[in-house]
Image (cartoon, rainbow, N blue to C red; front, side, top):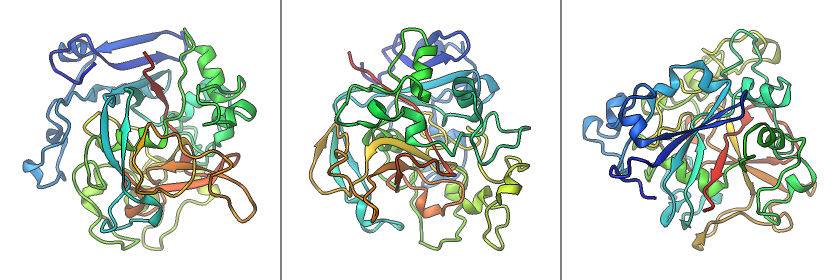
Length: 367
């Protein structure tokens, strides 16, 4: 299917019910007819701080953003919402130019072609959603009064996909996971057991950019690499250290473990959907928590790729202790503005549950 206004029956959003197990398909017609509340078809109408302000034009041809998804707590707790990304047959430039402030040598630009559409989470998986499936509250920012709709963190790749078969991507590329993992239990909870998974790193970056070549999806890039800068152009898009992530901006301090137990959403992680989305209606792709991807980590090269799945574990980068590491993307609430970029990459040992590291879900369209 193409991202065309003429295709009124196209399913743009999927709503999975974490209690009943069913899935509701939301079509273009449903959205345009107001069945699910407010939408926006003019991206720049969402707010200020777009490139050249009113002169900014998103590269996405057909903008339909379900803004009403932020108005009901159920979409961050008992429901799981995914948005379709029209990626089949699309080629984009992955990575960042050397001139981009914050550029890292592991972000070498190269062309990537995707051959399949996919659905990806509108929000990062929240603490309530994780509890609903796994029965635990692992997060650092765990204040009971507001934890439900905060992103879950302190979960490892192992927690999400499981050890054994869950750790074998891309050698096993059929999205098999361990039954006792979060994904294993989630699939079992849902009708037809859809193969929801983490996105590949390429899927994540394509979805984040929404066809935008700049570092941020409102058309801007960091103007400098000052670690304590507070660019207004990023403030509208996400939570980073100087935009609420720190509890003490003056002294550049994040919350202690004791503070985090009673910290509201003004500091630390934000409630999902608190900032402006990209032109595909995805929230918090920049900042809040680093988001795990399927791939093992290796530095990019200039070689073009099609549907890249990352290196094998044997070929992946190893720490000095010999541990291969998995990729996470997007920056987080205590990292700087220039690390909250579409091309920014982080890595960690796959079995480590790290504070400020969470995930969002993806469903590749196979037919």
